Length: 239
Image 1 (cartoon, rainbow, N blue to C red):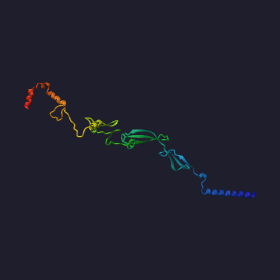
Image 2: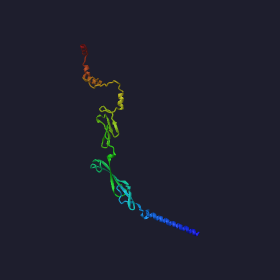
Image 3: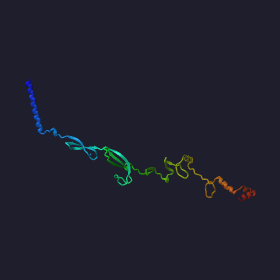
Image 4: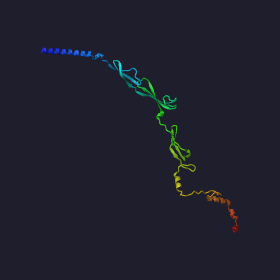
C-alpha cells in the first residue's frame, strides 16, 4: 500500500510541475501580469464644465478616458423685482423706453455667490384691448361710451346703466303713469286748447271766466239802470 501511495504522490507532484510550466509559457506569451493591469477610477474635476455645478472624469491609470460626467446646477430664484426701461433694449432686447419688466435673480445651490438675471417683459404677459362700439378705455379704466347728444335720458353710474323718465322738457323712458294716460286716449282724439283771454287771431275756444271778465269790463249794473223802455222800443224799431 505504501508503495502505491508514494507512486500517486509523485505523479501529482509531476502534474503540478507540468501545469506550472504551462502557466509560465502563457504569461511569457502575452498574458498580463497583475502589476501590468491599469486601475480605473472616477475623479472630480477641480473646475466644473461651463453650465454645470460639478464634472467628473473616468480615468485609466491616471489618464482621462471617455466623456465627462456632468452634474446640472440646481437653480432657484433668489429675488424678484419690477423695473422700468429707461434705455431702449436695456436691460434686455425688445424693451422700449417706459416698458415695465420683471427681473428674476437666479442663483445656484453651490453657494458660489454667482447669480444670473432673467428679464421678462410685462407686455408679453398681458393682452392689450382696444375700444370698440359702445366701449371706451381710458388708462386702465373700461367704461360704457354714451353719446350725450343723443342719450335721451340714458346715463351710466356706479350702479350701472340708468334711463331717466321723460319730462315735458327732456326725453327719456315712459313711466307707468304716462302709459296709463296715453292708454285712455281714444284713436283719432285731438287735443283742445282753451284760451284764457280774448283774441282777434286765435281760433281756439275761450274759457267761460275769460268771457265773463271781458263782459264785466263793458257792462255794469248802472248801464242797465239807465236803459228805459223807450230806448228798447226805439232799438227794435231801428231793426
